[in-house]
Length: 113
Image (cartoon, rainbow, N blue to C red):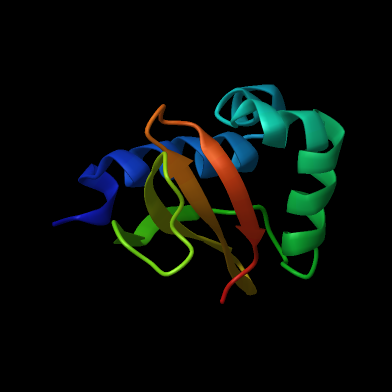
């Protein structure tokens, strides 16, 4: 199945697209409460900027590359894991997220694996 058509892929894509558009409030709304308590909009902006700072342009490609329904660190309440590639002129990065059954992100890993 196309990763972008899975529930976790859809949430991850919305999150990554919000980051790339500078819509950090919208990105934060996709996060579960415990993660929202730890990361402000300014934190999201900083993490994203640091991840792509070596690029020569803003991101121009956002694509869901991989999803998992089961993995060793899966917790009760998790729906799935998704990795979204984010790239532009001179850079290739991405975000990996864990999505809960409530369709909210509980964990973010910044950068390519």
